[in-house]
Length: 273
Ligand code: ADP
Image (cartoon, rainbow, N blue to C red; front, side):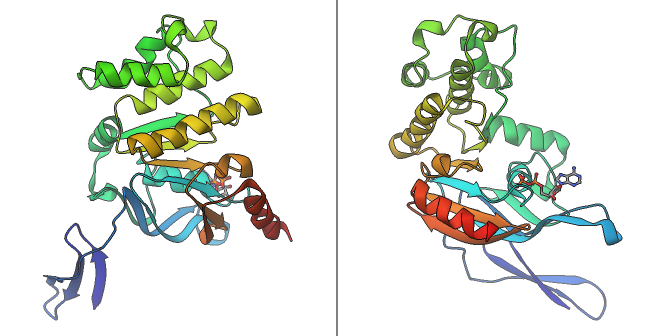
């Protein structure tokens, strides 16, 4: 039997010899662009037998570094599942997810927690701020937990850009929803993570505030080389990305570089037709 898998160095062919021992041969092929994160033959199944639901049905995808990628698709198409599995928040049933060259299936719970803390940033629809901490303390929390000192100039730049400089000592309860999301965006960006994962980051915001947050995220990619992967069902939000991936029934069925809201909307309509 011969099976193939990707390793950090390239393709590994595993051959099971007649004696049952596995022989691995490193091939000279190298993967050209492994991306900041990727999934290879990713399957996520819930339930079993006749009631099995395949939230992901063999997805292979690479999220390029320093790009803003949007994941779109109808409700239930697997968007959140894909993000959660690539971000180490959930485990695949089979296949592999990578952050950089780190294969997530090989990590135990503690290693996954550390990987998320040290290398990833998250922005969710619910801002998930700690109510007893000020905006500043919330923004610095990931670094505090990691025992690291912030880069003062970068912190100031982010706080200025998200327009929170004069609200930095306020508690979340003293801030509007839009301001709380700005804090959450700053919290994700200040540690300069390898990737920021955002799940419907503007879903709870009015359209003007949502636009400002998305513009800032795009700016963080263009100016600071941040990598962002965003799940959304909103064509307007997706139009801020460099590339849109379309999911349907747990599979990637299309992509659109340099999207506009109108073109994304037209593509989405074809799902319904
Ligand atoms: P989307 O984010 O595109 O709306 P999801 O990734 O949330 O889609 O879900 C994909 C499919 O997996 C759906 O059919 C959903 O019902 C199913 N699913 C998601 N989470 C679970 C779960 N914990 N248990 C059972 N089925 C689930």
